[in-house]
Image 1: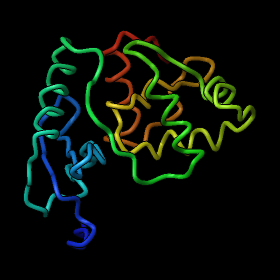
Image 2: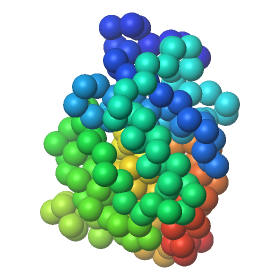
Image 3: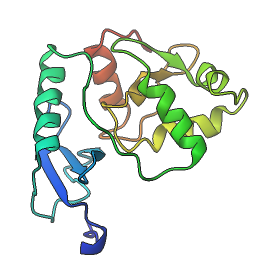
Length: 170
């Protein structure tokens, strides 16, 4: 896997184990920028040395509590520096979902004033830079079926997260 040029490497980086594979968190001085879930044994910045920060240590602690079943909400600053206005509106709606909540792609589109834009909603959900913290795994087809997941190992990762939160799915 190619490494990211130094000029584009976030100032803070931390990796941690989880039940769904290794996680890689990045942050700037204002908050968390990204959370990546290991895919095929790789993380985007595997070749980059860790550079922890206080906010990343807090995130690691809260993620550990989430995976242990003792935390249902995250109290972390997230700094979304990328994404279109449309994507950020989708991510803001996702951020309002609580542990165990579920929403369909269609309902999500309706909620942000974009009915009938399921494909675009799916693309924005898949582009979420901080999965788990902003719970994009909580979006299902109207039938309750998992239609995809862009993080980790895909559908098995999403199924694990849904089951962890007690969300019924097919």
